[in-house]
Length: 96
Image (tube, rainbow, N blue to C red; front, side):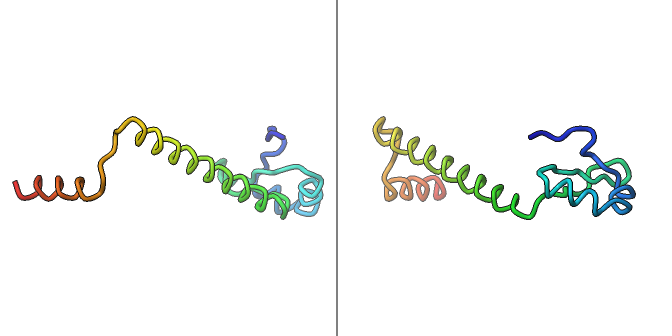
């Protein structure tokens, strides 16, 4: 469901018609409240943040899986150093 022009509401209109807007949102709509012509807040159903947080958690897991996969590919291609070698090389560079 996308946001349409009718879902963008000035703050003054939202104040005057809050109950009506709340019913629209409870029915599945999402409203963007503007202040001085700029996006200010969103009016969404109380259950939506849980859904958004779940999506964010899934996105983070997918990113971690991607990083782990890249790490395994680097190991297979011998593009890695063991920690002791890396620390020794850093110490040599700092002392030089």
